[in-house]
Length: 99
Image (cartoon, rainbow, N blue to C red; front, side):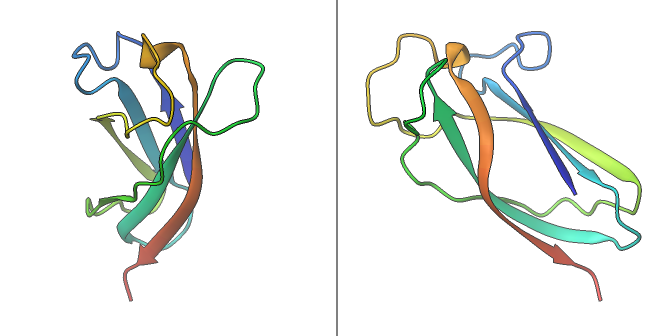
């Protein structure tokens, strides 16, 4: 399972949806649903500015395939002029595989 996060404008042009997430399924099983939380940090800082907000996506992802989509940024604990300047990663995650 791989999560790749980017704020590159080429991937997500609309500033309402600045976070591009690719979910890759490297397993031999089909994914039914993923749940996750974004982590946002200022460059060279360790504090997570993203207030906890769980996202979920129910796109079915076959084995060895992936899926990408643009997401809105979660509420932040500090004012940030441009969310694209933050370093975005995935914190907690949960994966539901098809039986």
